[in-house]
Image 1 (cartoon, rainbow, N blue to C red):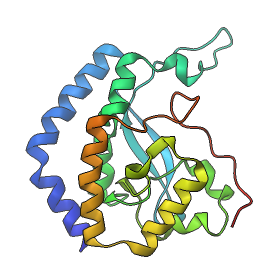
Image 2 (image 1 turned 90 degrees about the vertical axis):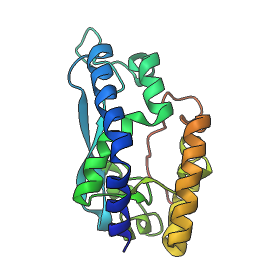
Image 3 (image 1 turned 45 degrees about the vertical axis):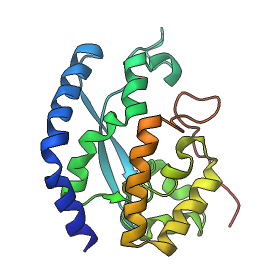
Image 4 (image 1 turned 120 degrees about the horizontal axis):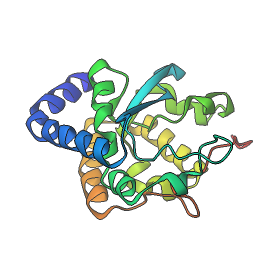
Length: 198
């Protein structure tokens, strides 16, 4: 039922998001150059790895040794706008179309984190990951990793159609006020390095 709802919502609103997607792609090509898209390995339902598609929001600047510069140096004002407005997420509608993700669910984290989860944290993979989720509307990247996991597992245990609708409406509000885009002291979010807590 949730999968049907995702597809209906995707197609009903396609006249709104498709033009925005094409315009954003053009702006990324002009402002940042090729490639317009990039993909990242993420952990999905049951811990299965898939590739999440996004618009590129950083430059490809490297140092004298050919290594990419830190995020805060490669993230331009245009890239910050893409992230703050969540426009960089539009290509992930492809992942929704093919069933990798849902509109609502725990955000899919980097696949490299999968071996680091304890038993409690791994429960976030009992449901399909989402474009937005309970943690995103309750702090997003401003939350600690432990708080994100607690909110994700709470969603797993309390998920319902009504809760999903509440999260979707709250997401619109969060995007409009651009709240919780980055974690403290970082241009994006701090890397997860594991936890001993259960």
